[in-house]
Structures are given as C-alpha cells and as structure tokens.
Length: 166
Image 1 (cartoon, rainbow, N blue to C red):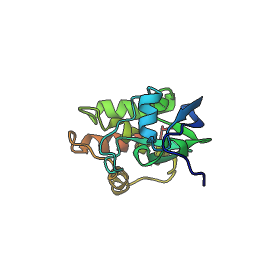
Image 2 (cartoon, helix red, strand yellow; image 1 turned 180 degrees about the vertical axis):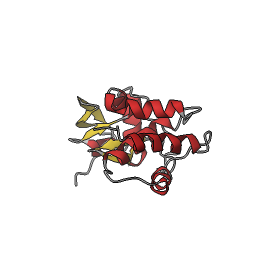
Image 3 (tube, one colour; image 1 turned 90 degrees about the vertical axis):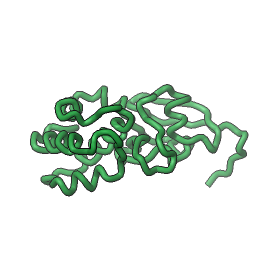
Image 4 (cartoon, rainbow, N blue to C red; image 1 turned 120 degrees about the vertical axis):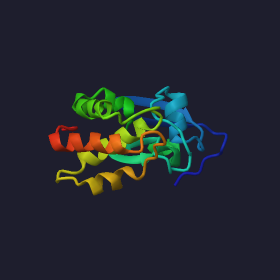
C-alpha cells in the first residue's frame, strides 16, 4: 500500500462510461467528488456522504458501490459507469420508460442511484425475481418522495419483459 502526503496530487486513470480518463487528485478526495467536480459528471448525486442513502451509487467493474465511501485514487485502473453511462446504453430504455410510466421518480435526486442499483441487480440475476427480492435490493437506496410503489412497479415490469441490459 502506498502512502501519500495529503498535499501531494496523485496521477490516476480509469475508464468512465467507456472513455479513458486521466487526472490528478489529492489522496483524500472522494470518488463522488472527483466524478462530480473534477469530471463534471453531475448525475452521481451526493446525499448523506455516509453510504446510507444510495444517491452516489455507481458501477465499479460492474459491481454497484457507494462512490462517497471510496477515494478517487482507489478507482485507478478500473472501469466505472455512472448514470450518464446508462443513458448512452439503449438496452436500458425499457427501465427508463418503466420509471416514467409508473411515476417512479418525483424530485429525481435519488433516481440515478436507483437506476444504477437496479441495472446492476438485473444484469446479475438471470432467475425469476420476486417482489421480496426487489424490495430487498431497493432497501439500500432512500427515496423521500415516491414511497417506492412506483419504483417497485417499474422494476416488476422490466423483470416481466426480461428486456434489460442484455
């Protein structure tokens, strides 16, 4: 493990939404802050900064993680996908359409974290998915507007159509 001075910038590089990124960051810069402030990808939201709300969820090597719990330099030589990366992928059109149809978003603050969490879950589960499993999967993301009913309906619709991320 390397030890860095707090005022020393570190060179990092990774792939973000399919594009090679090279940059410099301080050792204590959170990945969520680096993505938003240094790279301008503002779809990743910062809510609680404790990993509880799920607003900052991204994919790291196809696994959903909380970007507020990781330092930017820890993403070096990895592949990241934010909600902007999902928007470029037509295979998620059904998920976005289901969210719209079932009013699964209101203020929209939590939506990016939900979409990433759901995309990861659906891509990693080939079996039939029960409502209990959907609720369990969503339990790591907080929404204060929708009451989750529309979100659950949207996920159920996509699961029933089996047209996601493939």
